[in-house]
Amino acid sequence: MTSRFFTRQTLAFLSALADNNNRAWFEERKPDYESLVRSPALDFIAAMADGLERISPHFQALPRKMGGSLMRVHRDIRFGHNKQPFKTNIGIQFRHELGKDVHAPGYYLHVEPGNCFIGVGLWRPDATALGRIRDAIVDNPAEWSQARAAKAFCQHFSLAGESLSNAPRGYAKDHPLLEDLKRKDFIGIAALADAAVLSTKLPGQVAQTFAHATPFMRFMCGALGLQF
Image (tube, rainbow, N blue to C red; front, side, top):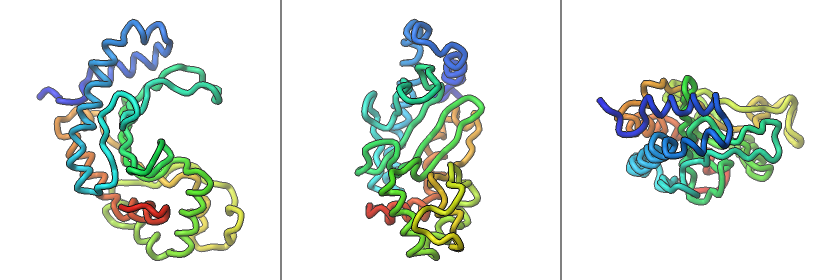
């Protein structure tokens, strides 16, 4: 069955871009990017609206070429050592309606040959947001522990991201939830096979996986004073 969204040609384009990550190659093949990557990604985002609404009315599926749920293909090369101009994956983030950027709470789909996954939570929250999450863990340890250890969440997601080596300043070094307080990222990752990305059932599968993270996402939103 032909996929309505991503195809083997989509993955082949991403692989070729990884091997030819330069502006001349990309500009010559920009029509392929539009037809194989951006257009199906926008179609997928539009198809996610109803499923996302059933999980929470406060997360948005915005099928826009710029400023929506589809993350830009151009990399910001100003500060890092990696000067390759293009991302070699498709990144789609369904952010909270009050979120302004990728550091806001959200649901995420990552399409990259051999490394596809579904993500939830907050990647690199700023210092204020990070402090609020840590305080919420300290103030509501049972609620956090239940959200993190919920059966459906643990069956599908693994907590990931970077952590501090030592206890964050202002928090007890012997706190029973110290490993969680040391986190710099509060994200859950669920692996996704390439074959699943190519399926016509992708929106339903992604929405169902998102739904398994509801206690975790509700806690994240509550810690930041956001509606879920």
